[in-house]
Image (cartoon, rainbow, N blue to C red; front, side, top):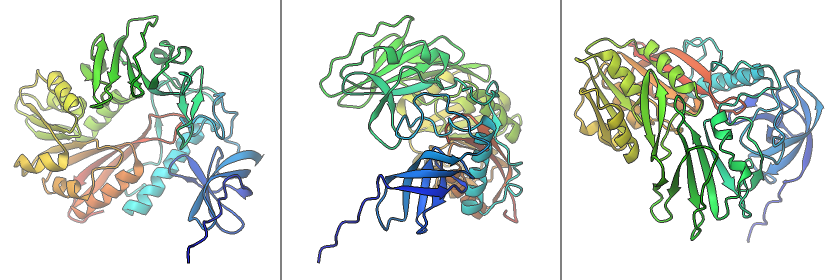
Length: 442
């Protein structure tokens, strides 16, 4: 007998008390029937009317938006961005929260993930529970830091640029993104028509005047002639190979960090906040305390930011091996690190390349894995190398916490943990854990 389809609850409204913040930019509530609601556009302690946006009867949880605020939190402000709110732009999660409250909630998420996935209290992780704002981001409530140096705009069927709505392919047309850095804003992407384009990415390099636009055309579409008010290089994403190819201008931008210039090509990875690269390099070096002549690994090394910082501090007798899967990033890293003869960069996945190197011991390790984390196999291998200190840079506290549990199994403890609010107005947060070996575990 065929089961009847479950009734959708989309559009159903519930009056609920809002509980704690949860990972992902929402808070937890429960219906009178006990069903869990993940509610956006609200804050802990509020009473709201929540309208279901995803879910059905009997589902483990529902997703919802707070569409009416019945009792507001003292941490609530009117969202400065006119495109923020239920059913609108999905780029920011906390436009309606005071800056201090945003950082406090991020800290609560980190603490919850550490406890649940790694079995660690903040004290056991050497963390004071604070999330530090980036330099220049200490703004009063109602003001928004313009920090995002790389913005990927979606383009609707009429050629207008905007941003995706939350968990949707729909495009919210905008005329200005408040968190876009001045260098991105001055390109005026929202003021042009981009007929035939799927997306337009705008990049404003930090420490140089380099600007780049990356176009992703719809199948069969012709590239527009890009005439902007300032010099800008233009790249396109290939229909067949998915690669990024030069249309005109330099195929890279120049980024500055740790007193060095780094070439970053084809829209390759670089920290989005203008202060992030320097903030993280300083914190990593403070945590590792490199010594002359030591050996180090820089895993998921990108264009060589941490490898260069390590090589500079380890001196001529030291050695660094970087591993990165992206072909263009490896080319850039080798270019950026050409003045360090004792640095080698290998291309491939860490879990594949590292075992082939034959390395059995190392003094220091830096890893900055993608959002999913490094995983048990890689962490187990790293723990076997006997590094005196490991710096783990993470953009997802859940993945970090899972990997910290694996490091514990391998005989490492967290010495210190620091958290940085390098993504204001969003739910994202950057963490740095410094680990060291222990015979007793955590």
